[in-house]
Image 1 (cartoon, rainbow, N blue to C red):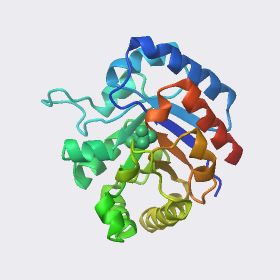
Image 2: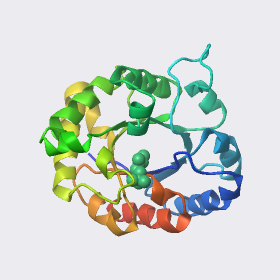
Image 3: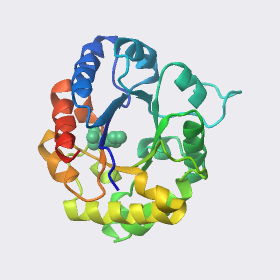
Image 4: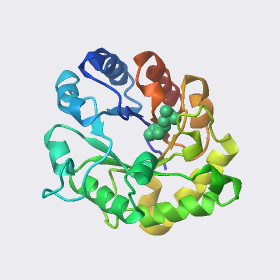
Amino acid sequence: MRRTMLVVGNWKMHGVSGDMPEIEAIAAVARDTASVDSGLCLPATLIERAVRAVPGFPIGAQDLHQADRGAHTGCTSAEMLADAGATMAIVGHSERREAQCESDADVRAKAQAGLAAGLLTILCVGESLDVREAGDAVATVGGQLEASLPAVDDIGRLAVAYEPIWAIGTGKTATAADIGEMHGALRQRLLAVYGDKGAGVRILYGGSVKAANAAEIFAVDDVDGALVGGASLKAADFVPIIEAAALKA
Ligand SMILES: O=C(CO)COP(=O)(O)O
């Protein structure tokens, strides 16, 4: 099945109003690269400003709370993000699974809330170095995915991101063979859970993706794009990744 490539930047806890020119520069190229879906998941403080500055370019959040509203100090619901103009959200990033102790069940609830609000919802999974070295990566990440997948029929706006924890921000990337093995296994899990619809879910790779390695990673079967951290902060670094994706599109 043909899937449109998807390249999303995760700005993590970076970005203030002075960074708007980077967002504008990225959006300008993205508009000219219509064969690739792209977007930026920004700090919540920049979402509304960016939505106004770059109309039509997808802007998203990096987390959401699974409830619609309530006594959850400091949290933001999917409905609120959509109201601010966000069209995407990341859920289950390893930094949140670890630092905020998010369980697979939490991530599933967040993914369901994101989809219910109409957000393109990017569900992250990935293994630690210990698990990789023990030879358990494929089974562990597959189990994590199944336990985190939303239990809903309408998965048209669901994407998955495989981000090996040891590759995030380290300059290390998994080999093309390891990425291919993992993405193939995740595709089988998606097909097992959702039937034929699982073929339409995009599986992104994340972890030290940059201009220099993007084309090689994108060439791997079942790699349908990337979730990019550090190299998404500057247009000069992020634009070539979008352009590399266009070669596969
Ligand atoms: O965590 C990531 C994206 O969500 C990857 O971050 P880096 O691209 O900085 O390794």
